[in-house]
Length: 159
Image (cartoon, rainbow, N blue to C red; front, side):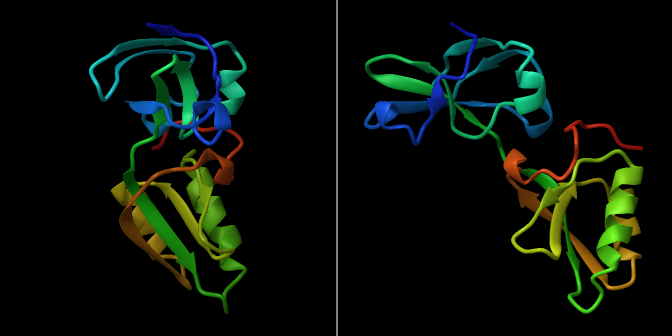
């Protein structure tokens, strides 16, 4: 099966009551035009998106296929991430945190509040962040939500 556009999201009423078959798209693949995947139910899925996907990306619960019985939707699996928390009495350290993460060309995401941030895990960055006064960091599993992205582009490049 070849999917060439996003038909909507699972929350759209048109897809209510249909069986959902997910296709996993890793967070760092979401902004690629071409994919060949196997869905959770074993369906071979080819994905060929237009250039607009380079800026919008595939998001959790995007519907790529629908018929009278089922939909195939995007699942962005959880991955290893760094959860960085800036102490509220050290708000200026947010700039230092953003600088250090940006300096590695790593994507950054907003967290649950104005003092919490997430970035893809790699050990040297975790150590660097933990060295920033007023900031604590830990390795966690996180499902990235691109609507919370702070980076101008999403990629998997880091030093």
